Figure (cartoon, rainbow, N blue to C red):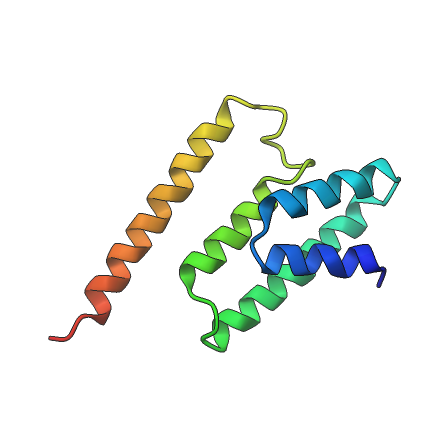
Length: 109
């Protein structure tokens, strides 16, 4: 795996959306195969899933890591700019709903 590939994985796992978007843009500009980039994204999400299973990450981290993928330069919503604010609101609504559900299920009875 290239240094940029590992860097992309690390950025997605760290939920560094601006860094991941910048790196993907640079990789595409340099001619990196988009399918290779998608494979790297899947690898990053595998790590996120493993961290979730081990209790290191929780549902909000899963959502934020997934939202990083939606922000990528080859995302279908990049060309539909009016949809992006709506996606942000949906992500915030999902986060709030999950947080509220977690609070209800983890409170002592």
